Image (cartoon, rainbow, N blue to C red; front, side, top):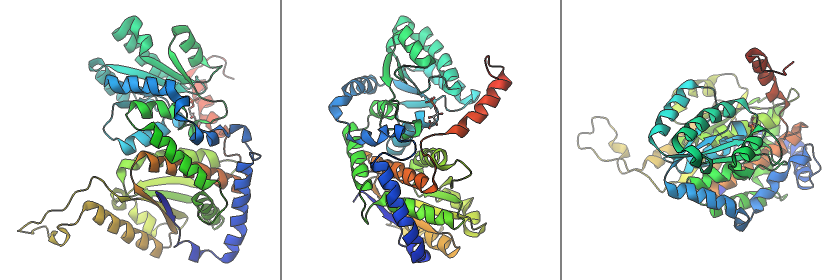
Length: 422
Ligand code: PA5
């Protein structure tokens, strides 16, 4: 099995009554999802994406391969769900890559660094926005488009690819006018569930990852998560989260033992935060990279307010590993580890940390990824997507809207003097 979920330490701390309450409720939530009659059921297009066939994606493969084979950079401009899925998959599997992400903040510094790099290297641009009107990517695109037009003249149109709505938005209008190549974000897929649309797949292919394996992993994740059986990880995870929340555990810490998968946690935070955090409900999704953060946040997790629970992600096997050498002098006293692999020490750090945090009354469970590859990462992401839907339905909220995201935008627009804002 590629993804395993170990909640054996949680179960003894739940009373049978908790499980009797929450397991059937979670199965009911699964039925709402499968029968497509829960809240937000007009946004369930993501559920069909793992079953896409590779030959339905030939246009995307063609453009993705063109970028990959050019050895040029690809600048992906997007924010939130319009960048986190691709960034999570690519940076976890291919840390040295040709993809640059921008338009996900308003930092003049980062944009300046990128502009400098783009003056020296050839590049394509993929601007990604479902609404086509989001400010951060809009500003970044205006600036990078100007550079592309200066650098490539009329040929810039062949280097700019737009991923947006089929019908509406400023970006769609611009794409039509300038005759850019275009990919569509389906109406019934929200940003944070869009990794398997062109939003995620075009950058993933352009980076050189294997699309077939991505789809295979997604399908495995889906098939395992939509059956009502004891092995269903999405049911177990959602059920455990609901029980813990009912016991006033208001913060979930996703604790990764592998910093290279840092952006999986960033993607997960958006997915869980935006899907659950509404109408006064929701577990706050936080994340840490271990062992790094054991030397900063470890104290609070061990000993602070007991309102947290912890979900580990552990990579069980590494294809790239390093052995600790023997040293005749042994001044550092580390010879007791000589001949051991770093991953072995990391695994002991995980076990020791989990036990320590449990002794500190932090409930824990663990996702085990057998090894880092396209299939396993996509399986994990799909399990998380189904898990959050069940969790949100358990809470009684619509997982697929995000009304709260508008508040800051309206204030910012007023302060900026945007026309037509009341
Ligand atoms: O999940 C969501 O819907 C949001 O986070 C969006 O992805 C984000 O706000 C970007 O929106 P857009 O793709 O319209 O630019």
